[in-house]
Image (cartoon, rainbow over all chains, first blue to last red; front, side):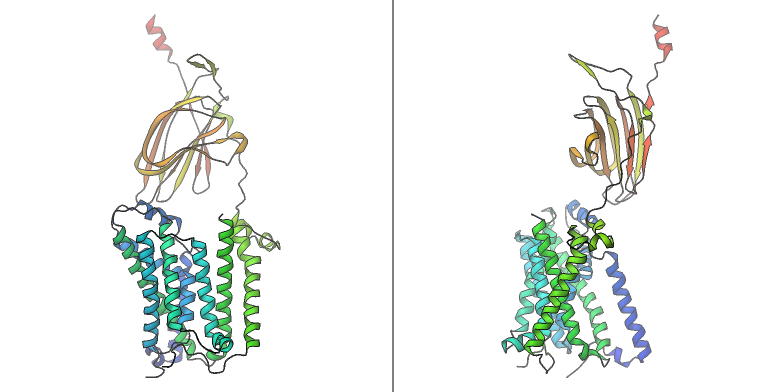
Length: 245
Length: 219
């Protein structure tokens, strides 16, 4: 049961084929991401579409949800942090489910209940979740506190914040009451599909990396970089909060 | 129960952690100050954004404005006496149309003196995002909006509240290709078309011709 790697097929491939398969996967991810790099939030074209809606549009909303997740680097960085030290498929499933439950609850409650929050502040907390996960992966809490705050609760809690972030993106647009529930649920389903796609790409890359001797040696540096990225995101959003006044 | 999120067994020392966190914060601050803030908010304390050309993302430099071509005639200001606004020259007419692919936009504006009037009618093959607005000659680039809503057509009279260019912004909200056609008559002196592909083109306006035969027939 131990060390059952996700995607065991990769191990059976010859090193050269494996290398090619991974490059292909990463290339596909890069391509999808490059479509609108940096356009976190909903692009203006998609926004006009959302505002023009009057009635249920299941597939378009699913597409936008999936696109938001696949191109949303903040959610992706957090997921990388979450699965970084998870080796067993069972654990990956557990943690990703906790994250999914967390963000679905606040996405639905926030968007349907009209709970409003400042998007910059929510995004800054999402940045904090990346820093937290990176610090946890460094062994920071164990070293500093002597004990480890429950990582499952942390993922669930930060999942709630990520969902709130998704809800505020949707609320930026005056969505029609007609078909609202169907549209928001479709968006949520799309988010989960996008998460599965992104997670697959992340796991392919991590699994490949884990077969290399440098993985544990570079794990420390990688998580320090993850923290740095989280700090950049926090600073970016807090500055946005100050200037949006 | 073992915690699944297993960290490597050799925990880092507090010193090492403090150093790592400090480096992470410092690196993040440098990335923010030198790259992100200049590019996103035009905040550039070290001047790196300018040097690297990043501040242009946050604050695109305004294109130098070409003057509206005077080709179509003298500026026409009315001399008001009672209900009559008299002009020194005749009005002109215009008829044109624009084809807009999905998400394309066009701005079409006439130059009018303060108080000058025109009649207009425009129609679109589908609903377009529409903004009827003007820009003062003294403050080009600052649009003053008169009406902003999604429309399929508009028809009316317009009296310029200030001297400048006045007209419409039409944007295809996506979907099919749309055609917008405009007809107008007015005391304007030039027309300019601005396109989403950053091209601009003056339009030829039709001067008024009195057909003398009508006058002869009345004799």
